[in-house]
Structures are given as structure tokens and as C-alpha cells.
Length: 346
Ligand SMILES: Nc1ncnc2c1ncn2[C@@H]1O[C@H](COP(=O)(O)OP(=O)(O)OP(=O)(O)O)[C@@H](O)[C@H]1O
Image (tube, rainbow, N blue to C red; front, side):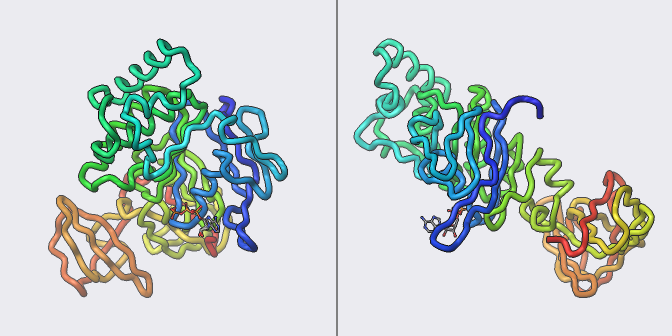
């Protein structure tokens, strides 16, 4: 991407006592884009967010906003001087202020008319104008979140950080609230970094993804690119089920349990074939596997199968399958190029 990044992390590390919890992490955030930082619990996501916000120092590497170094060993620009908005999981509204005053809290230096106009604009933009005189404790989780985000945006931050923003919302409302809120944030054009451990959430809302595990950034890129072309088995599994099968590559072709497949540009030798469950179909002939169980979910059946010592799941249309039955699998004809990883993968 040619556009100048708003924020850059270069080789950022963080230690707690002797334990390094963020290890040479690097990525860039670009203006107006929604980026999701995805990784399992404890992998260092919140620590990265706190370092970006200036709430913690870095032990190694640097963070720049536009071209200014805001964090480096011995450098720590104060949070309020970074122009970054941060909304935590609990939203942390001021309980003694109504919605209007919560939103206007950070802009008291503005003249009253300008302040009122901006608050009105944000209340309308985030569909909370009717709640202006309400107290935080009377609001639903989703409403509180809109107030917290409007309050953060009132200071016109260059970047908005959201830490697990949807984790407190009820399951059935979550997707609807998420979709509406992200649409509003897109309309505002703010640059947003969202921390989540939910792959579906990340795939749904992100323009750009950052995949993390064990303190390291594994991969950055568009969600579809990360999903279809994972750089490692760990990266593949962060975004959902990945089927991993042995392959042997020779002269740009791979010998795999699905037969011989094209493998352009791949190095000769043992490799792993990585495919998504959606890329595998039932067929009359192909790779034989034994059904372990079959469970119907709506219009799909999830079939757990075993091939030698490997077990994995595939998705298929409703089919009568019994445990112990041998079925045959092929790769979906629409699959572009199968993905191979060097062996061992990680
Ligand atoms: N102040 C601290 N002192 C010591 N260890 C800490 C501190 N903060 C975080 N850690 C540890 O650092 C690691 C990374 O924590 P962090 O909160 O960044 O992970 P996370 O990916 O955000 O996890 P979660 O999704 O569960 O919030 C964890 O093992 C955590 O226990």
C-alpha cells in the first residue's frame, strides 16, 4: 500500500519480569481503515494496545505516529499527547454524568457553541440523540458502547483503539450491533484498530488483519489473503478450521492424498497441504476417510473424519452418514491453487 501509514510498530518488544510477552512485533495502520488484531487469549494483544496508547513503555523497537517516534526505549510520549482514542471492554463511562456530558467531557476547552455542536453531531451520528439526558447505568451494553466511542471521537483522534469491543454483548444481538457500529465508524472515516480473539468477528469487520500468537505477529494482510494463503499452520488455525495433509513436491507438482496437484514455485521436498473444510467435497472416488460423526447444523452437515492418525472436519450438504462408514473426498473444483507449507510448518 502506497499511502503513508498513520502508525508504525517496528520490532516492538515488551517484558514482564523475565518473560517477553511481545516479541519484535511490527505492523502499520493506514488511514481510514479498520484493522483487526486477532490472536488467542494471552498472546499480547492488549499489551500492544496499551503500548500504542502510551499507557506502557516499550522495551525494544519503536512506535511512530505519522513520522514522530512516540515510544522507544527511553522515549514515552504521554497518552494525552498522542491523539489516540481508547475504548476498553467495560466502556468506563462517567457514572455521574449524563450521556451528553460524557460525550462532551474531553472537549471542555472548546467554546460552548462549538462544543455543543460537536456533541450534537456525534449523538446523531451514533444514533444516541434520544438518550442525551439519560444516565449511563440506564443504558444497554450496546448503547453504552456507542456513548464511549462518541466520547473518544469527540477529541478527533488520529486513531481509535477498541479492545474486545463486542465481547460483553449478548450472542444474538452481537452481530447486529457490530455491523451497525462498524458501518457508522466507516462513515466517520476514522482509522480503527480492533482487538479481538474471535476469528469470525475479525473476518467480518476488518479491512486489514494482523494475526498474532505467543507475542509475535505471524501475518498481516487482507482477511481473504490471510484465510486462503496462511503463512503457517498456526496462522491458518487462527482463522478457523484448517485441514493439514502430507504432501511431497517435485518439479512443481505435489503428490497429495487428493492426487497430484499443481504446486508452482514450491521447493522440492516434503510439505504440508493446507485446505479449508469448505474446499473439500464428497465424491464417488478420491481420498478415502472414515466417518467419526456427522452433525447437522441448519443447511449443512459437519462431518468429523479420520485418515490414518489424522482427524479433521468437513462441511457438506445434508447427507445420511454413519460412524464407521468410509467416504471419499476431493478438492472443490473451484479452489484456485492449493496452499503448501514447508515441512515442519512452524
Ligand atoms: N502487568 C502485567 N504484569 C505481568 N504480566 C502481564 C501484565 N499484563 C499482561 N501480562 C501477561 O502478558 C501476557 C499477554 O497479556 P495480554 O493481556 O496482552 O494478552 P491478550 O492477548 O490481550 O489476552 P486476552 O485476549 O485474554 O485479553 C499474558 O500472559 C499476561 O498474563
